[in-house]
Image (cartoon, rainbow, N blue to C red; front, side, top):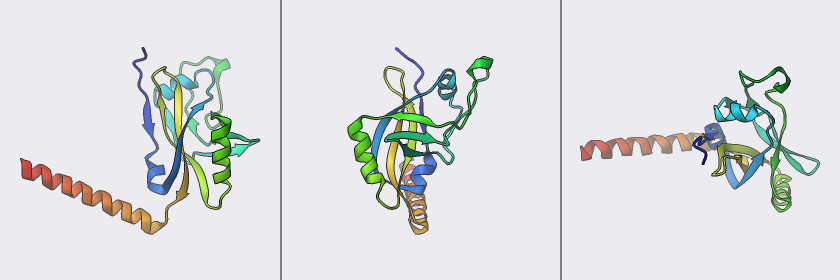
Amino acid sequence: MKTNKLNIKNRKAFFNYEMIEKEVAGVVLQGSEIKSVIEAKISFNDAYCDFIDNELWLKNFHITEYENASAYDKWDPKRDRKLLLTKHQLKKFQKKYDEKGLTIVPLNIFSDDKGLIKMEIALARGKKTYDKKASIKEKDIDRDTEKYIKIKNY
């Protein structure tokens, strides 16, 4: 049984996008990329998904090179990585992706029960500025309410 539980979220995506539909996909990694991911040496900045030849590819997802990797096991940190989905899931996503104003963003990367690296992706629509301000206001209100309840129960 694996003890390394990995779960890294893309918090910026939840702030910048309104999620429409979510799916879990496998990620094709090579060599010591897996060790770098397990050590959480990744960055979601500007990461997105795109269709190339009816396959879904993860672009601009940065995985830092593993320190102890051999000279033959080096890679480009921002190389495109293939996402593994069923044909049915791919067709469904591509049909909705072709609509105006939608994009596919990575939400989080995690390891499942078998120790495989998976990524949750979502079909998303960009939020407007006033929507972002409303979500900030909502978080502030929730935080203040929680603080008040804590003080009252003390």
